[in-house]
Image (cartoon, rainbow, N blue to C red):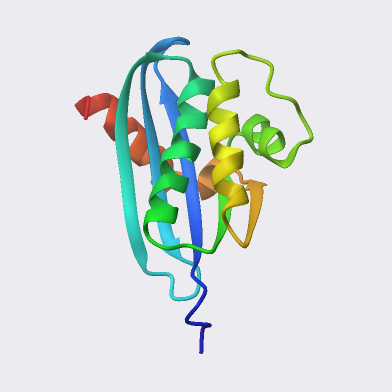
Length: 140
């Protein structure tokens, strides 16, 4: 039986930009890590942005939702190897527009009891990819 004081979520994120910069959107697909139940799907249009900005804002929006849902642990999965390595501290965030988002993401991760972050192949990130493209296509 799961610990009633903990909630672990599996989060897939993706950002899409048509052109770089261009019309952009974020997508996030969130499951309960223990039951597999889908607990949230996010799709948000971002205006004209870079792909990296879209990737980072997808992580930020997903973590905001995870904390709102009461998560104590998250497992982040994304097909952006760069963002995964920046979150894990292997690479620095150099772009001035991305530093504030990085700081907010790291602050949210610090509020959790634990987290993992991993790069996954694009074919394992289809739900988040679909949502980020819906955000761009429907401008929602």
